[in-house]
Amino acid sequence: MAGPRFALQDTELGGQQIKKGDMILPVSKSANRDELQFANPEELDITRKINRHLAFGYGIHMCLGAPLARIEADVAFTTLLTRMPNLRLNIPREDVTWHYSLVSRELAALPVAF
Image 1: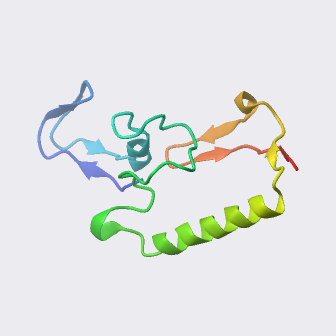
Image 2: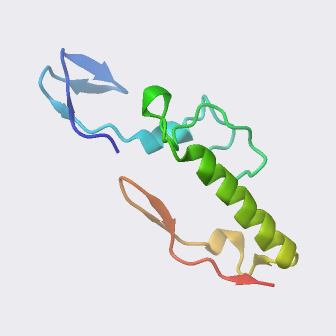
């Protein structure tokens, strides 16, 4: 989540009137769920091509550790699935519980079997 911003002029955004000087809190995680940019944005699709998401920032604000994080994730998941090829969700998918906040979306638990 970016720090507060202040409107430089009166405007309307998504049907909401914003007056000059109003404080705005941009929530960049919502940009990664834009249906105009991503097919099925709420679905985990490990084959999805990286397509303008903001998980590691953008441009001059790009996270320096992004390439390392991607390599670590690749090694971790490849190793996990190689060692546990029968790993599977142990409850119906619709019973998975999530906790939501302005800055994150977290699993309450992930019951698995292997």
